[in-house]
Image (cartoon, rainbow, N blue to C red; front, side, top):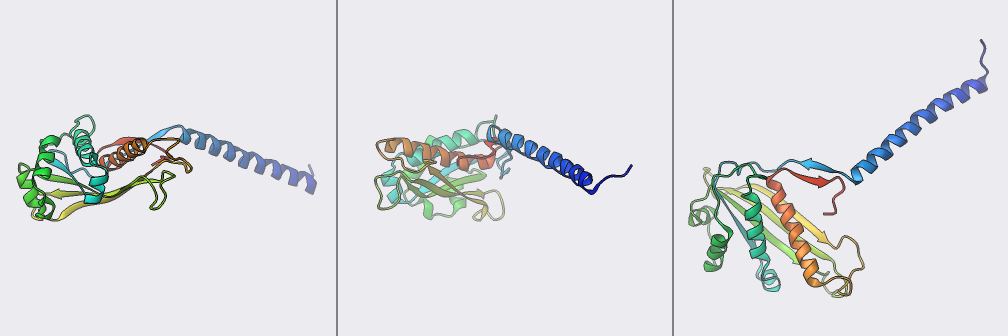
Length: 221
């Protein structure tokens, strides 16, 4: 049977429309699924398993003066998360946050000491988890009318039982922002709300490095 050039063209066009239309539908369904679903993120550091540890938080004095409860909150919450056997591979023990804070506040020069010495003074722990908060602000400098919160820092691990006890064995920079949209000021939300959410998001990013967790495909932070 003979086919005209026009009929062959229309047939080819129909096949192309079917193929690419199907791809669009599949892609749209996948996009919709991801927008409303989460995925499992594996831990970045696995060296706490079977090891004793302590969490210490440090920041500049200006940040501590402006946000005096930040160190206490991060120390307590991160210690609680990393010592939870339902989240993290079971550690060989840990120093309670209250004991760490007593050491930190009772030894003003502790950050100048070798990390191996700090680990010994905290009971001879094998792992020292250090969260250094390098920035924690609620506004852009010079603009007190709109919230542009930013919290940033680094997470380090000292493996005090290794031959390089003073060397950083693991290092990761973390940063979060809040609010997610611009245009919010004190009339829409309080400074306490911004501060609390920034600290919570920073805690998430810092602690998630150590255990498997669920995150949205398109996270806000």
